[in-house]
Length: 251
Image (cartoon, rainbow, N blue to C red; front, side, top):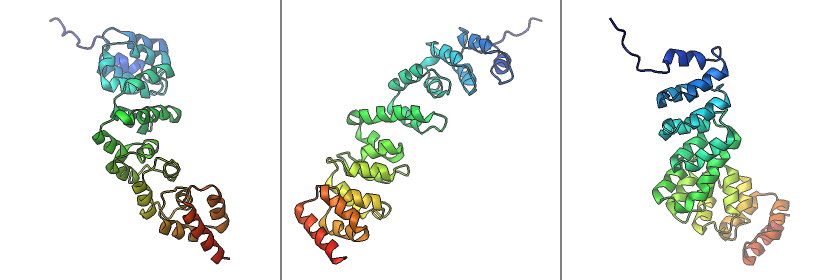
């Protein structure tokens, strides 16, 4: 009886052996990646191996059929041996949430993670309100920090509660003149962020910080630091006068 024809023209068993760390030579892997019969599933099986040579990853990226699949594009861009020019080209084609997930993936090299963050920040003006709120809730510290300057209160309120948000990102937002007064006041009252010294110093450098809060924070900071901040602070002169008087009483 004639044997049943294989539905796997490359051969899954063969693919497993050539793509294993102790298997065939790199040339065999590249040949497998270049095979016209390569399918998205087989491409993903190859890309799961972190020691896959760069030329093999590049060969997969040349396959127009498998590269139509979102998971394959993500896997190629995230592979540690993907040629940088290919990874960057793919990143520029990613949609919003693919970029976010890519930036948060622990398998992606740290220097490459900055690219999706930069792309997301550059797209903020064209991203819908719903997408901005979702990004504010889940994205990286860099993206959440950029969204602290959003004009919509729902966006920056959500970003302020992002678990990845850092003190440095909040300080950076506070030092921007475009920070909304409502955002500044929210930071002044925030249970997690308001007690932090660097944030209090940044609030004393923001002209929108309410007088009562500025006085409260100044009393908790070293006088020398407060004087240094007030020297170049854009706070209203009236506020700075009150703060200097308060410093005199601490002598």
